[in-house]
Amino acid sequence: MTDIAYTDKKKFFWPLASVLGLMPVIGIALYYETGTALWLWLTPIFFYGFVPIIEVLFGEDTSNPPREAIPGLRDDKFYRWSAFAGLPLVYLSWVVGAWFLSTEPFSLNAYIATTVAAGLNGAGALNAGHEIGHRRDKVSINVARFLLCLCGMGHFRIEHNMGHHVQVATPEDSATAMMGENFYEFVLHELPGGYVRAWGLEKARLARADKSAFSLENEVLLNTLITLFMYGTMTAVFGLIILPYLLIAALLSNLMLSSANYIEHYGLMRGKRDDGRYERVQPHHSWNANHVVSNVMLFHLQRHSDHHAHAERPYQCLRHFDTSPQLPAGYFTMYLAAWIPPVWYKVMDPLVAEQMGGDMTKAYIKPSKRDAIMRKWHKVEPATNAVAAE
Image (tube, rainbow, N blue to C red; front, side):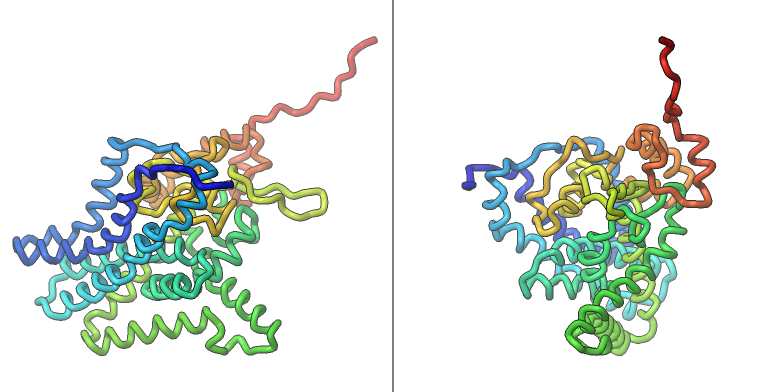
């Protein structure tokens, strides 16, 4: 296989995903310039007001790089550094937000707006950490480490790579949502389940080397201590007034990540083979979206089927599959739907049923909702055993 000439039309838009880490700083600067506190809400207004609108205008992109072009795309360091660039920018925004709250006269509106902005900024850090955390070189692992530690999610690389990717779309995966399970129910098992699974994976790995889980070789423990140290240092520098800012922003970031996990595999389940093992992950086990604006902002996270098929394939190389189930909108719009369960069920349950071809025995359904869902959506005709008359 040889490289061919190929132009990635989105190439010079990819750094925008990192540059958006400055959005909270821009909001604070505009507040100082105008004296209008509304500018402090710039970040949530941009992502959940402006982006869903412009997505409609820019539409979808289903184009794929030719197979022969993937090696060249993969090795182009422009993409690597476009993702790395977010690290200093999200930390700058995080520190500037803390400085702002510790130096300005207290205003509840300003405090809430700045905290929400930091939470959304942290969600961008987690998304970049997810992408970079699939690389195996030490630089990438450490960049991912500090992107994830910013929001108290230092366990995510272990949990996601060695837990979720192995058990996705099965009842064993705490990060796969059941049909009929609302977002808030999902979070209650997904967030703690992720930490528990990561700790168990690291404990087992160290046990094989005859080492204690309470060792700094335990990535989960080490990264947890890094987060505690950073939060302690920030509190010591800026005062106790920023402690709610740090903790609530981290929680919001985690909830944004949970929002992505919730929508990515909702109601989808891998079948079991005759030997009792689950079938290999296929394109139809992930929900996808080709909306170009949110795909650029999220490093192609929405081409999720190819990500699961080739976990180490970098974002610029991810492909669209015609066989993968498609969401009706990009992630930012779908998050809004997920947070309002009746809206989510109205939009997504028919799509799950369609994806199953009406055979809801193939769907991953919340046990307490199974009877109601089967009555409403199961449309498979019973097999007939009638014998033709001779």
